[in-house]
Length: 269
Ligand SMILES: C[S@@+](CC[C@H](N)C(=O)[O-])C[C@H]1O[C@@H](n2cnc3c(N)ncnc32)[C@H](O)[C@@H]1O
Ligand SMILES: [Zn+2]
Image (tube, rainbow, N blue to C red; front, side):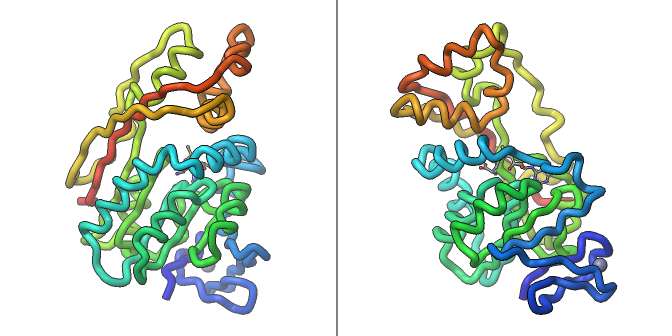
């Protein structure tokens, strides 16, 4: 049984024909492509929140080439090592769904999976991987999941809300948080910015017990112009390129770039 909750009143949602409804008769349509829109208007900053279509398509192309599978493998390995039957796993800010889908494929168990993103375009793309995941348009600041019902939350390169994570995780549940370090994609930053600023990561750390935290650094080789452009375009750096530097977009060819991330396993206190 799923753990979906009404985003308005947090009561359990029941499937009634082509909708999900709570006991207060709040009703949400299931889209033709089988995702559920549980994003409330007050939880939207704009009409079309989240990553845009171009960025999502570039992300999908990049991920489907397997360039970031080394990150996926780290996440899979931790979950496999701490596995138990019938887990409920939520991928927060799942984007176009690559990691959620491959996590499910690789675990290949009886876990129930949820992929949530604020971008409707992202979730629509995600439904093409499989219908066997609860794909949800929603906001990580108001997660439409019942209290203390999840075993694992994964959050890769996305915004999270500590209170909501604590509310949704079971007492023995944990979160896998993947964040970018200062030297992540440093070669792109050096190409784009006159001065590369090093930022403190204080504000992305969460007030939970750290079970494990480690840095993962590796260089990857982007094979050609298209692959290099896809990675650049799926990052915010692409939108910061000044006019006088835009020529790099044409001349960009094969490229060695550093992946430098931190993987932290948290248990809410
Ligand atoms: C950098 S992308 C990462 C996507 C995916 N985890 C991956 O690594 O491929 C960040 C994602 O967070 C989503 N996002 C941003 N704010 C959000 C929010 N408040 N709630 C849910 N998703 C959000 C964006 O739409 C985007 O898909
Ligand atoms: Zn309700």
